[in-house]
Image (cartoon, rainbow, N blue to C red; front, side, top):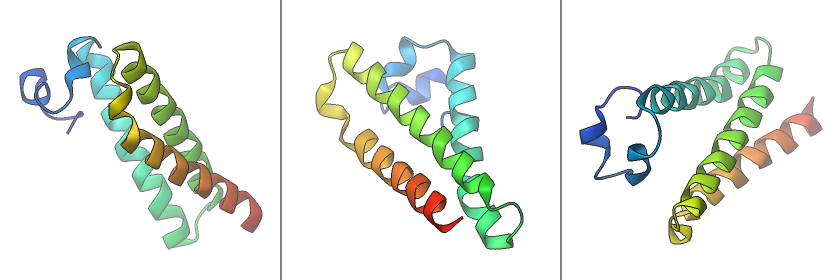
Length: 100
């Protein structure tokens, strides 16, 4: 959503978009899509499976950034999803390094 919708469309769902420049919101959205593709395609195709680990590391960093933005805005109650996604991505990194 962050890579395609306008700031006005995103605002009701994601209050942080009013404090972050829209080009950065777009970059975050594209990185999230690339990260998801990077988690799925390399293991599925068997081509460069290490890219899945790199994608998971990138998603860990995105979630850390998301947590930081929420905390800076006083929205600590909203970081639950970020923490769950961070844990899932970190587990993927850990399991990926064990399997490779």
